Image (cartoon, rainbow, N blue to C red; front, side, top):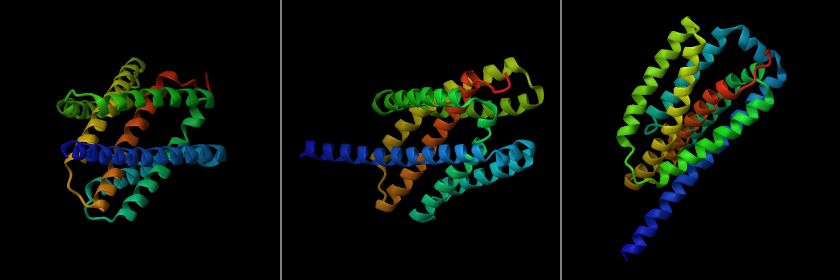
Length: 231
């Protein structure tokens, strides 16, 4: 009897994680497609590069979408959560189209493959490890806040050595966050007592979390591996 109950819990957990990764993969595909299409149009990507305030406005809108989706998930319905997630993924594709103006397509593709390998390895570690990553997750969030502040400071300093250090910390940080967030989602599903719609909405939030981990891991790796077109 107890074995049957354990099997049922494990099956439910796997189904939940499958849903999380399905939404995450779909969002990444949408972002990549929009980024590539926007870059091919040329004019819009160039306009974004020439008008940083437009890029800043899009960034604020994206931040608002994340806040609404994460903070108000209990007050919105499932279709709305899906719509917000899809909108965010598509809008991020627009802003990420600028990387095609800066880096060669071959180096972007190579970096994506490396990022996918690192992400997959750390996600597997986070899912199967018996090490409690809860405290590590809290420390990583504090480091993330410090990394954001350091990045803002370096926008003014424009120090290449400092930028390299920030990029290295960013790669390590989001690799570890991938493992910690995966474990957190696995444990969350085991204890949550939501209805089916509630679980589906939590899966969207989980997909958003891992999606952001992957995007940031990819972008920090690109600063190391990307071949600039003007070199």
